[in-house]
Amino acid sequence: MSNTLTPNHNGAPDKAGQALPDKAGLGLRITEIFYSLQGEARTVGLPTVFVRLTGCPLRCVYCDTEYAFSGGDLFSIEQIAAQVAGYSPRYVTVTGGEPLAQKSCLPLLATLCDAGYEVSLETGGAMSLAGVDRRVVTVLDLKTPASGEVERNDYGNISLLRSGDQVKFVICDRQDYEWARFKLDEYQLADKVADVLFSPGFGQVEGRELAEWILADNLQVRLQLQLHKLLWHDEPGH
Ligand code: SF4
Image (cartoon, rainbow, N blue to C red; front, side, top):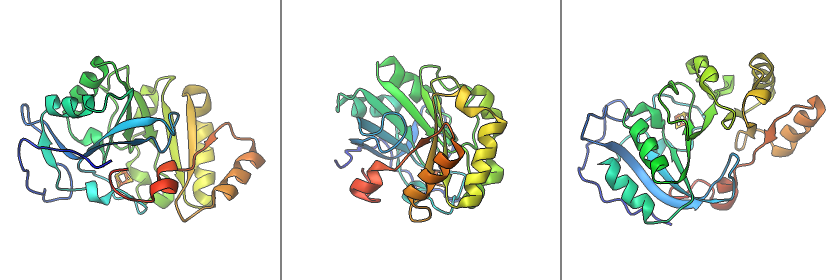
């Protein structure tokens, strides 16, 4: 379904390919709001409204949302909440880009929780989770070496994860797999969060190959194939 954004300001693209810093009253820079099936994580396959915030401080080599690096339009939290309500969803996912790069993401999450939705946050792991509403399910990426952004992981976030949260690794090759396996053990992630997700880098590792590695090592992780890519490839709005 296409988005139905009607911004309150037309913001110019930012200079650095990141979201402009939002100030009180200006709201958030939004790339799209759309209704689709959740493509990954615990609620995969369930109808979900996605709120995609503009901007990201990372540049992962496999990024599939480069169109969200810049541009977008400014919306107030009230306008975003009204658009979300139009779909009457149960599940709402706040994603990006990197949603936590905009300070007003935190009050947006709280507002969506207050409205009674089951809210999840997809974050790339470089920004602190401090201040995220306790009702939100966080899906935290830990960037692997092949992402090109492994140095940006904020490992302090691991102590802020709650039992209902999820940690995701995008595995691009065997070295990534070994690295992820090490982190799984180092931080005892399988005991700490609801799910640890191993997702094959699209076009880089076959799902079957990753499945066989997981089984051979008896890892307590969930293999995740990205449903939205199987159904809609990389079309924006899905
Ligand atoms: S963190 Fe996500 S949005 Fe940002 S560059 Fe990496 S994959 Fe793309």
